[in-house]
View (tube, rainbow, N blue to C red):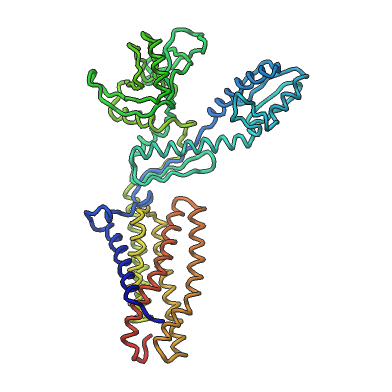
Length: 517
């Protein structure tokens, strides 16, 4: 029946008040932290930076195949299979063997149970392809192996990019996968992307190695340049310690030298290795290498067994902060290349806001005028519910501190249309019921009841489309689908609770009138 209990009326008013209060926090400044929340503006509204990164998996493939050459050599030696001329070139491992070992070698690479254990338990037979011709063997990554490697690299890179950006404290970054070797980064409000580009462009592969004058040591040696490009130094290829052993890194001021340094703390394994290396290497230079360049090469004066140390290198406080951030977030599995970048200025973002708001206001006014002219007092009720509907929608977005984009504003405008459509269906149905029913209250109640199926069908199908867009789409599409989806729920609430309550109050007092609608 056309009836609302006092408890139902109380809850309708309470819910409406709460969401209107949260919506108002976007305009008014509240001191209470609970209702201090605001809607965040997306890249297209407040300006910011857009970066498309591509993962260069070539070094990862080379490194893994380099490991495989050692594994294959050791495994075949254990199995007493003689191979010759094992080489790695152009991402392919080549070697030769005698005819009598041919079947055995092929079986090792195709047998899913072998996995080249115990040397490399992570090896899977489907990762590699082997081709044999005249006892010459060529081993390379299979298509499936490449896909798995790229997916793994992308997942790791995505997490590390997210850590680095979160450390800087940018507002509502949008970090998404693109294909299996690209990452999209949107940073609203950031109009100077140089620092971000610098941080994301570094792999942050940290190693500690001894400086050596030997050209051929047991582990080999190589010449590396200092970061400032001033000179070259020969360092051992033997890695004493890597960035994986770091627990924390922070910028600090060295009180003795009055210079900015990066202090680091090692885990238990790293502290043990570092202590052993510094105890046996007193008087030697220990090179601190980041991404193939030497940051500094201090002389070891004493054993460092505390598991902590300092990296110096003429840092400014900003560069020391960035280096500490890179070390804390971990090394990228592969280098990242910026293949596309855009910067949206705040003026362009403001133009988008103005255009969107003008479109919303014009559309809203036209709808209000049409409804009022068409349905008189019930048009006024509809317009009141429509305004409250917008407050409800904005309030929900505010509670979750959602990011509003230009397509999101389009979703709000569409919500207005959906809300009007529902009321038009109801009122037209009421007109039909009044023709056949003398009791006005029953006619109005029937109008709401019988139009419910059509309204629910229309809104549910729209909601399904919004859900599909949200999960299948990305970026702006998600913003549109989110506001549209929330708008459907607020529309149904405003139509069947707020507008219906106001209608009940008016009809109950004016039921004796000959023509209500």
